[in-house]
Amino acid sequence: MSGIDALPPLREVIATHDLSARKSLGQNFLLDLNLTAKIARVAGDMTGSDVLEVGPGPGGLTRGLLAEGARRVLAIEKDTRCLAALSEIAQAYPGRLEVINADALDLDATQHLTAPIKVVANLPYNVGTELLIRWLTPPSWPPFWQSLTLMFQREVAERIVAQPGSKAYGRLAVLAQWRTEAKIALSLPPEAFTPPPKVSSAVVHLTALPQPRFEADQKVLEHVVAKAFNQRRKMLRAALKGLAPDIEDRLIAAGIKPTDRAETVGLEQFCALAREVAALP
Image (cartoon, rainbow, N blue to C red):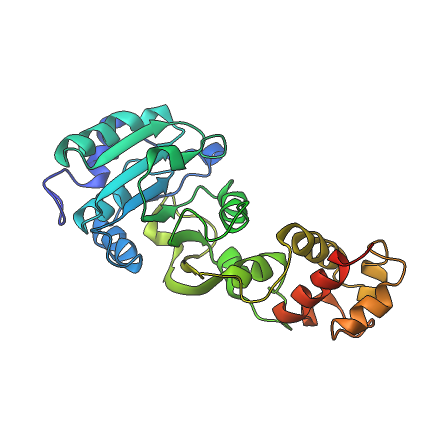
């Protein structure tokens, strides 16, 4: 019996189902159920919410979410080896866990969820950033989710919350902070995982804002920011010269010096520049 429910400890589950973590799937399993329950609590009160989990593996975080009172959990798992272990969790929590064997990049999970929805996941390292960007850039806002509580490598987590002037500041920070309140909620050492990764990890909590902080067309802002940071060592008048023939004038109108570099430009200025570019004939 484990500390949070009547199911076996995770080490026993992994041994029973021969679930060695696979590097090719970006897997690093969390075995401490007290820790997975702590991560679940970062998401706040889940008793009235559906929870989307991507990459549950043997189900450590899944059990934390259910034990902490999630109304219902939808777990998307690509690795068929994990399905039997997840099925045992579903039996222990009748009617509260649905498992879909699929690639989260190919599945529209919203068809299987009822609002309000929270996303909580120890994301596989190889798809984590791509999924985050998708969740931050839906066709319309507010998104289908109220909050994202996500485990990343510490380096990625720092990029999400980075401020202008820091080396970590870039496209991810702009996209995340434009529409969410983002903070690092927990830090985890490599030894918390099996197998231990070579880097530390962190849990980031992002709460969706009702409206973006500043007015801007999403696709234009994405394009401007991507071009600016693609050549972050260059002055913006050079990095963005393909955007408009009068890019220097547009930069000045947005309150940006043409000689500035992307890493010094704040979110409000990037949004102002996006509006200038969107106004081009």
